[in-house]
Length: 139
Image (cartoon, rainbow, N blue to C red):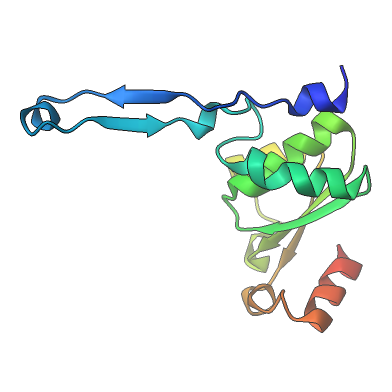
């Protein structure tokens, strides 16, 4: 299986109708676009966001940022596992380091992501060039 096969999405994402008498009485039809079904492991809209970055990384380690329950971190870790490239998650909240991982971070770790915890003030400044450079060196 090639990387293109692994990343092949199920597009377009299906529409699912939600039926309810309250809607019907008012002539309203509610359709949900099920982006959570695009890819089994690059969940939600993450497939659309990640694929260009994965392609640009060209197998090099991918460093990304997120909170303790980040679906983005989970999807990036899954992509790294599926495609065989290293991932590093810079996690907001250094108070979490050394504690048991929640289910989201445990899944990231199980998928091979190295977790790097940073304090919240530093995380807020991650877009500043000097802060970003320091985070990338540390990660």
